[in-house]
Length: 319
Image (cartoon, rainbow, N blue to C red; front, top):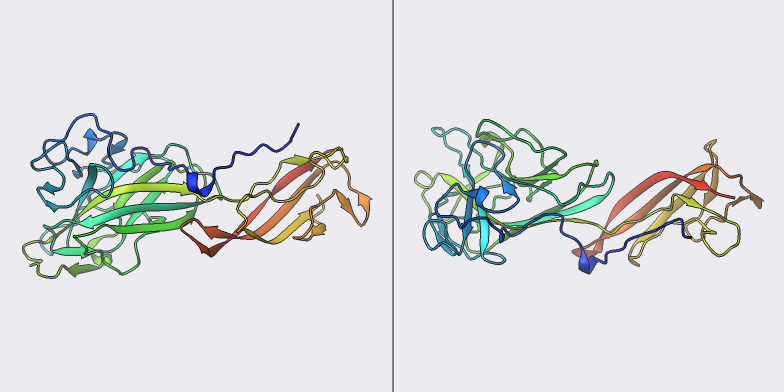
């Protein structure tokens, strides 16, 4: 019986860890603003009032026409909306956020891609930067409507405000999970002073002093990476006779593959060959060993670009 069992999901069939990613599923059709709770899986983490839009409504919270502008859904018939107060000396910092629990917690050390789309509403006189996604192992909450003082793992292009109110703008990025993160919160996490505000052409920011963004198509994907067996048995029976990184994407490049014994002695250092359980021609004893791999991983949305990946761990040689 194989000591290593893997489930492989090709890049073309990646699982989105965000439930109800385009807000299509709902319990009730929204009939006014401040009803994000009507859509399934999503919630409001502070005392502000994010909105839910759906084409089932033809008035204030309809699609494509609604109380704050005109915009078709990026996907399907629904999207969410968050209000961000602009750089006003009169109005204090106010931030709206949307939050949901992921289908599965994130794995420690694994690299994830996050992607969502935003569009500035027509009734916005200002566009801003720093729209991002923050991942946490527990839900973040607040009894105020000010910005959360956390640093998002993914953020839109630094110092570049999103002012496009005709099309959807992608916000995306990659990050390595610390492990256990299972909540995603989306919004602007900086205060007014540390946020860049740009006037929308043809708008009077004194009148339209807000930034309001529609949000649609939220996704979190784990990048196909490298797996290592927890044990192997070099007994020439044709099963698990060699130890080597297991991966399925041919565009992955192994730069270093090393094996150390319990004394920290390097006993295998070769990316071209698998370890056969020997050192200097001698069979090594049954015990726990350490591995180190360094590789270049292709990005799923641009295979020509790669990111550095390091993985260490232990395994058992069985005799």
